[in-house]
Length: 283
Image (cartoon, rainbow, N blue to C red; front, side, top):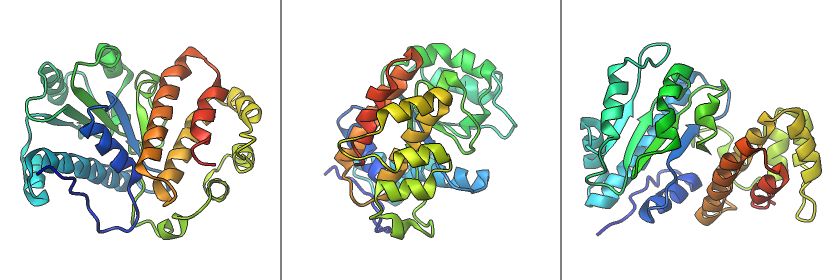
């Protein structure tokens, strides 16, 4: 019997996990995702949080497809699975000549054999250089059928536009964060007041209401600093992830809205319509 074997040790729901897993079962995953986590943690600590989340997601897929116990699925993942590839480097940056990159291009030539999708997980994707991003361009523009690419981003540096413009960003929250329990019922307005370091953006976001999403004000702020739109995506996803007030259907809607926005941003469409899809989810 196929079943979802989630880790229930935490009382805090992992809404992005549930939403993404539901998409896997329905075969509705997008091609590209970026995992990141906020807070003032060291890169190594962020690496651990993000890798643990990715591993849990893949272990649950293996359990679901094969009826395995989590311990066995974890062992298989560690040994290596034919439909899962981890790409990593110990150097300061990825190089086109790296063996792992050659293995990646060989891997994506083949369709998945056991799972609904094949998965490539790029560890520390902030190490991808512009040279490698250019080599990946054809894959990013025309992703091979049945392949999912997950970029684990463990620092706060700006991601290369080649990759950033094509991925859905998922904010992962560490469940052992000291303030997580207090945040489970926090309103979006209170969350913004506490979390948003951009004072102008926080002032506007904290005052949105069902009948006034402050779209004109937000549009003007984004014109001043385009990166603010990505920051809004991050804040909405982070709030939904930490709150008990949302279902995984809400998270799916958030992923849909983020995906649509991600694809529209490079074409300079209306930021007001993009933001309206997101903000109506948290008011």
